[in-house]
Length: 236
Image 1 (cartoon, rainbow, N blue to C red):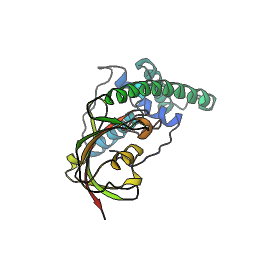
Image 2 (image 1 turned 90 degrees about the vertical axis):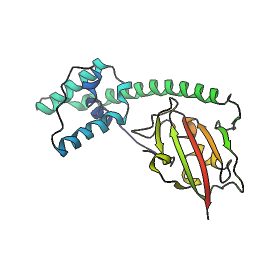
Image 3 (image 1 turned 90 degrees about the horizontal axis):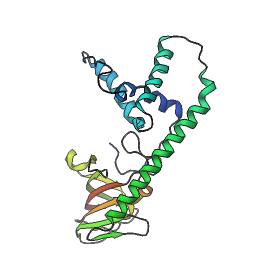
Image 4 (image 1 turned 45 degrees about the vertical axis):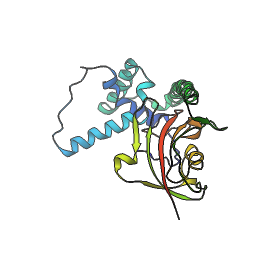
């Protein structure tokens, strides 16, 4: 699971298309395939490869079920037959198609995220900073706030706007140490508004989180994140 550490990712159309074929059968609807039982550890590992690739780029949101069936057909033909299909003739159109779909999805997520953050800013006690971070203090700490160069110990839980938790030090049962300057910008700003012993909710717009790239396979592009953060101590 992604921590609030900064991340950068690079993808391309061929990699994304490869992932797409692995979700074609699922996207086509129930009953189109009969799952085989996992007999050996290798069966489970191979299945995990498929699951990992399927979820890496959220391609089920880029292609329709019918389109994924066609992608799956091309995959099967490429694996099972030698064929004379010249993929190089389609690399440009492949990239263009995926870029267009990603741009459309990204714009939708951006609009939804902006609306969520704006609504969060109207909550009682919410402070919206000039950068767009929404800071809601739940428990006031004492002492000095950390600086950008300080190391800190925190408990935290990160979730999407629908409440789904994607990362939690609480669930791991142990606090997490970070250097303030190494985490995403929304955390950097929020932590420097806190004091040891304090607890706050940070509603972080995508521009202060993982931006247009996201953090595959967990964080989609252009989505705001909600963090509950307890600043336990500044590590000296």
